[in-house]
Length: 175
Image 1 (cartoon, helix red, strand yellow):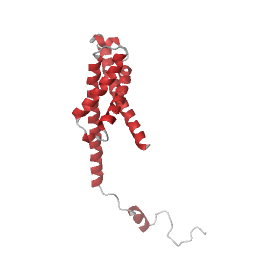
Image 2 (tube, one colour):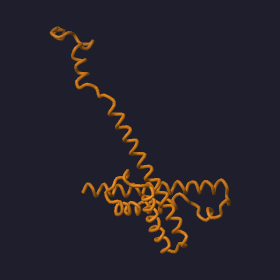
Image 3 (spheres, helix red, strand yellow):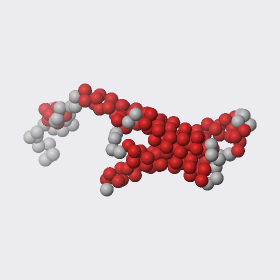
Image 4 (cartoon, helix red, strand yellow):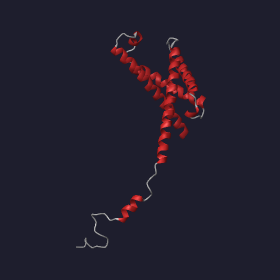
């Protein structure tokens, strides 16, 4: 059950990562349209780009995660190459584009989603490798630091009585 939950978390995490990337690209397109209206005619066709690209981005991330589970097997990210990852991302993008084309989008959407999938997959692998490098660096740094000696603070506290207490054996509370 634990491995199933971990895989589901990975699928949703990849979907969120791709969705955020789609929203960021949509935000840039929206900014261009607001700052330079009419500069790129195709941008004015859609009014709200971030959510327009976040939803298919999420779907593409989920499809990519499923492709990765099937094609990648149980390999770790550091065992996979960027070109292979990009190929699987392009495949996921083509699958997503096929859904769009089947619902009436033009055929060139396949090229856009395939290229976008390859770029998103490459970016995801790069982020995962950087996170792994960071964790490895933190572990190496922590390994070089010596932890405090056990009971070091207790031993120091036992040798000297606190300043606000009377010495042991005095009967100051009886009077």
